[in-house]
Image (cartoon, rainbow, N blue to C red; front, side):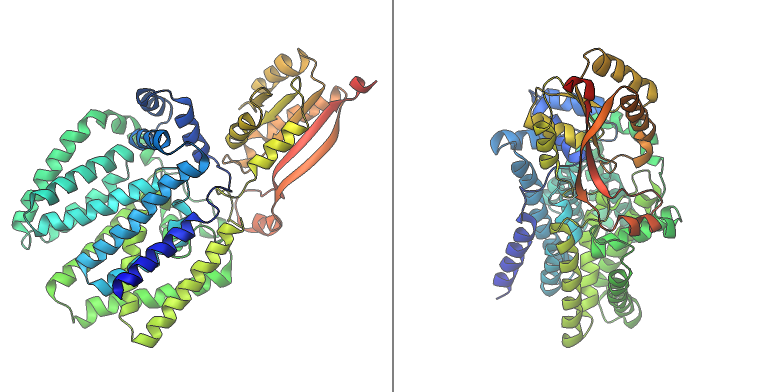
Amino acid sequence: MRSILLAGIFILGGLLRFYNLEKCCLHGDGVLTAGIISDSKSLMETWCNVTGGFRGDLPAYYIILDLWSYLVGDSVFCLRLFSLVCGLFFIAVVYKLAKLLFDRRTAILCAYLSAISPFLVFYSRKVRYYSLSSFLHLASLYSFIRVIEKNDFRNCLFYTLLTVAGLYVNYSTFLFLIPQALFITLYRRSYPSGLKRWLQCLFLVFILWFPISGYFFRDFILLLQAEGFTHTPLKAGWLASLLYFFFTFSLGVTVSPFNYPVVAAGAVVYFIIMVKFLKERFFIRQTDRQTDRNVVFLIITILTVTLLCALSGYNSSRYIKAVSGLYAIATALGILSFRKRPALVLILAITLLSAYSMHNLYAKKEYHRKEFADSWDKISEYVDVNSDYKDVIIFNGPAFEYYMEKANPLKSIHSIPEDEEGMRQLIREYIEQFKAERVILADSPLSGLRMKDFEDEIVLLKDYLAAHNYRLVKQECFDRDRRASLRRKFVDRPFPDCRTTVYVYEHFKSKM
């Protein structure tokens, strides 16, 4: 019966991640990732493109995705499918880790919570390394427990390979090594031989990591430069980031933190669960010492990794996605501390909260700059239909460039320069020199860049067009945000009414 239940959980998790996988457009970093894969002619070129042009990124994920695209395909569906598969492996590892630390009942509930987690579903559909790295982090933690508890060569081998693979994918692997060191130091008397085995594995890990260690020292300052937190009601720096992490682990990134009724309901549900979890594990003391140590390992890892990430420059929950699996284990333990009826009520409440967040994801009601929200294919199609080969197309979103090149690679497209002098040069070289009859501006303020970055350049362009007999003949709004005015009241930056607006300017003398 439990095997059938577990199979049903995996099917549910797969369906939630698979739904409409190919219908949503790439955005931001996903476009950059797909661009690197499509532009590289060899694995070595992929390696060089990543290490040379993208500080903070490591090449292993791109190499693996390049191989995947060669074997499976390079469509958006195929690229996303790799993240989806890693997301399903993540559920399996959560189940195995919860079973190893506690029992099978906890593991099954934990697998269910991971399968329906809006946070995990969201990032299992992105063309980025988050699913792969989180799977490697969690699998490495599982192997760590096996290494310190049992003297087995295979456990040591798996731990070494998984940790090295994580270090080649993303720097966040270091965050997960720190709680391991804290835990084994705290319980060194309980695992005397385990400590020695772990240190031996760790030595081998750093030997294998040495070939790419130079990138870490190159990017170290970048990783430490915290950017802070931009939500006005929570301007408390890293502390706000820490709180926001638990918000996203619980409700996902598709519920606005300013949707107060849903946030309040989620806070009450998870507060009750966590209080019960801590009370049962630390005050009633009905468990054996081994279980107590496993609970300490769980808490140390969650708090240490989350705090360190909040203090870093990359203070976003997606980089420590693996922690959400540990958070699910703690949630499962808290729920199972209740009697059967209240436990079922809490499971139902979490399911309803997850369903609401999932509805926001599928209905494209994300909080702000998120993937799956923009209709880049329709935008590029509209621009293609309303432009000629001699026209000048100007844009400020990398996703538009990706889809426009797919719609018509022969069109003259130009990214908005980063300063006013660059805009003047663009005007001289392409609008004035070629006497463009039409100028099309695709303005996407929420394209993944800060909205104010191109304000002066766009004003300069519009002033030039108005002064040189260009008339606005068409204006089309895409992906209208009906809650923009409400969001502008709470968020420390402006929200446009439309995520993208296309302006078509025509030189009226050309019609004479």
